[in-house]
Length: 118
Image (cartoon, rainbow, N blue to C red):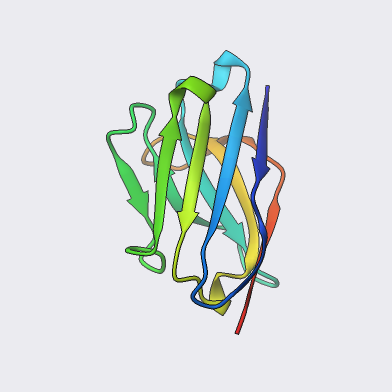
């Protein structure tokens, strides 16, 4: 079972990026999915999460109104659309299968670097 993240890169402030996280293996399909990020010398933090059904979402205050998380069930993929990016969004972003509410991770994908230049 694997989570494969993609879509990171370099963008100017105010720009947009779309991250994707594809899961292989049915075992993860029943979990909520989340995107975490870790900036240099900072702790990893939850940015956004979406329930297994897709009916509930969570966003950190710092990204509300700018980021949108969504699921594509046919492809077992979770996307994170990031708009109006700020330099403080610069971090390594990780996707994860999580328990809804506690955000306890059950599986991690590899990180993808997002760099926002000012």
